[in-house]
Length: 472
Ligand code: AMP
Ligand code: MG
Image (cartoon, rainbow, N blue to C red; front, side, top):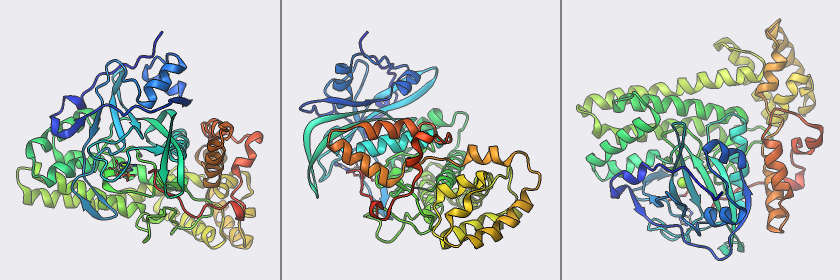
C-alpha cells in the first residue's frame, strides 16, 4: 500500500495574498533518517515504503492531495518590526484530517521561496535533529507543541559559518502555523478584508464558538499564559520569542536556539543572537505579554469602535501577567507536592528557587529528587536546603500522596543541551544511535529507568554548552 496522507486543505482556499504556491525544491539524494510511526498513525497517514517516505519527506515527490505553499507573515524580531517575513525555508504541503482533527504537514529546509530574503532555504542536520528531539520531548512532557513526523538527509551540503554541513529536511506537524505575525502582516498593510478573513479562519479552526476579536484575544491570551507557565515549569527557554514565532493555537513552534536549564538561574540565556537577554528564562512571561499586545494592536481594526477596542484590549493584556503568575504558582506548587498552591505557598516556591540559584542547583534533578528525599545533595550549601525543607515538610503535613504528584510532575529526563550536541556530532559522523536513544527515553520523561541514568547527569565542565544557534 503506497504512502497516503488524508489531505483536506483549507489554507490553500484563502485568498492568494496569504501565501505563494510553490513546490518544495527537489534534493539530490533523499535518505530517510527518522520516521515517527506512532504520530503517522494518529494522523491517519499510511506510511508506504521507506523509499516513498524518503521522496515525500524530502520534498522530491509531492504526495496526492497536497497543495504546497509558503505562507506569508510579518513579525517583531527582537522588538523591531519586519513588515514582511514568511516561510523562507518551509513549505506547507497541506492539512491532514482524521476524526475532525486537522494538522498542518510542513517541510522545513525545503528550499528557497519568495520569502527567503538572503537565506538559502535550507537546514542542516543539526537543527533538524535538535527540533525533532526537543519537540517530541515537549509533547511527552504534556506541553502543547508542533511535532516531528520525519527527517531526511538531502545529500547536498549546506554552507554555514563553520563550513559545509549535511543538508536535511524536517517534516513537522502543528495544529496550524498561523502566527501573531500573520495578523500583523495584514494589519500593517491595512488590508481589512484579509484581516477579517484571517480572523474567521482562526476562530473556526482553533476557537469554535468565538465570534468577536476581543473574545479571540482573550482566548489566545489564556492559552499562551498557560503555555509559557508550562515552559517555565520544565526550565525551557525558547530563545526566539518573536511575534512570528508565537502561534494563535497556543502551541510551541519554531525550535531554533532553544535549550533547557541545567543549573538554575533566572537570567539564563543560551541563544547566540540574544545579546541583551530579551528572551532570557525569567523574561519569557514579560515577552509573551508584549507579544499579545502586538496581537491586540493588529486586531483593533476589526472592531467597530476602535477607541473602545483599545480600552478593552488593554484591559485584557494587563490581566495577563496575573494569569501567567497563577498558572506558574499552580505548576510550581505541584512540583513541590501541593495539589493547589495558594498565594501563601508562594514564598515556599520562590525561596526554593532562590537557594537553588545561590547554590547552583540543577533545575530538573533538584525537583525530581524532592520526592525521593535526596534534593539536599544538589546544593553547594546543603544547610540552606535543610532550613527550607523544615518549612516545606511542615506545609506538606498530611497532604495526599505528594510523592506521586511530584513524580508525575517533575521529569527525570529533559533533552539536555550537552546530550543534544553529542547526539548531533554522532549523527554527522553517521551514527544515529544517540538520536534514537534520546527519542526513546524522552518519550517517557517521568519514568526513571536505570538504563538511562546517564541521561539525567548534568554536563561535566567540559561538556557545558554555552551558546545555542538559530535553526538556520
Ligand atoms: P526564525 O526566527 O528562525 O523562525 O526565522 C525568521 C525568518 O527567517 C523566517 O521568515 C524564516 O523563514 C527565515 N529564515 C530562516 N532561515 C532561513 C534560511 N536558511 N533560508 C531562508 N529563510 C530563512
Ligand atoms: Mg520563525
